Image 1 (tube, rainbow, N blue to C red):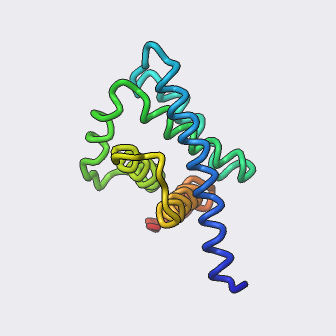
Image 2 (cartoon, rainbow, N blue to C red):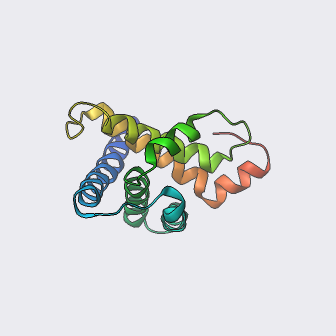
Image 3 (cartoon, rainbow, N blue to C red):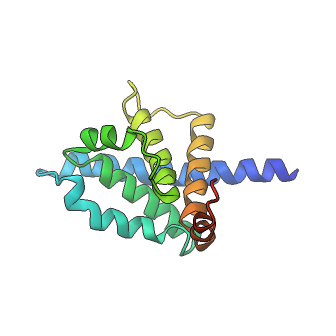
Length: 151
């Protein structure tokens, strides 16, 4: 197996793990919560989950990303907040931009006619976005941001 094949396999493993946990949490929340909070009400929880990515074990990081995205996208004002975040803001921090890539990717997929249907390309794309956030949220990402680096 070549290095490129190993990297692609890593994207698939990461993407599939994030997807399987995300979709389970998303539908569980959608079908069990009677009253949905706003994104602002859940911001502490979402921030806490995201802070784990890049700073704990890989399995925990994938859970954290999946839970954060599921919690965000099941809030009662999620559509409004996604639209707000999509406004291009040059002042956004690299971490926020990296999270938005993952969040928007899942948001768009959940708006399809059959969101439970996935492809290998979708999973690889999700894995790439997760790993991008992991790097941006790590100490290395913070260091690079201080020097004006962009990913």
